[in-house]
Image (cartoon, rainbow, N blue to C red):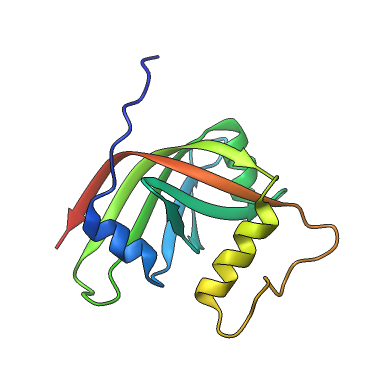
Length: 137
């Protein structure tokens, strides 16, 4: 199978991700059925950063198939939305709690830490590299 070509995120998409827009990420169940989840989103340069917990359906799906589709809409222009296809290139627990805390600070008012963390929960950082980005307006 050929190596995927990763693409840069357009500046308009970076602006949307840097805001407080919610995204939807779709993974594939083992039988190929799409499974969509609303997710918090941020970025590191041209890489999209998401977070989940071990054992969740999207985590299980990504173990066997790293392909994802993500959609996100501009909160300032409800007719501008982006569709992203990509691959999860990293699933790491080393900074999982730090990333979910950063996302909680971004999306929840007045919190420093993710308030729903349990002692047995293992948070997983997902790093997505885009293979295709489409803007729809």
